[in-house]
Image (cartoon, rainbow, N blue to C red; front, side, top):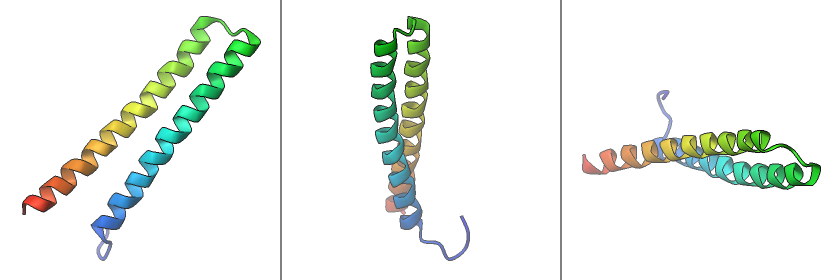
Amino acid sequence: MTMGRDPDQDDGRQGRLVGLVIAGTMILWMAAQWIGGAIGLPGRYVFLFDFAALAALFWALVVTYQIWRKRRDENQR
């Protein structure tokens, strides 16, 4: 973090990014499931989409937890 930046703005920016990642992941995952079913993709490729979605959602969970801890620690001071 650089000098002069507001931590609340950083948290807000991170929160918006997390929201976009969650929404984008779900939209892309649903589209991949629909397209995969429509063209008859084998199950192993569908699982790749599932694992990619899980990875993105896990990242979002970790970042959300980091934001929560940072805010909790700032409020305890």
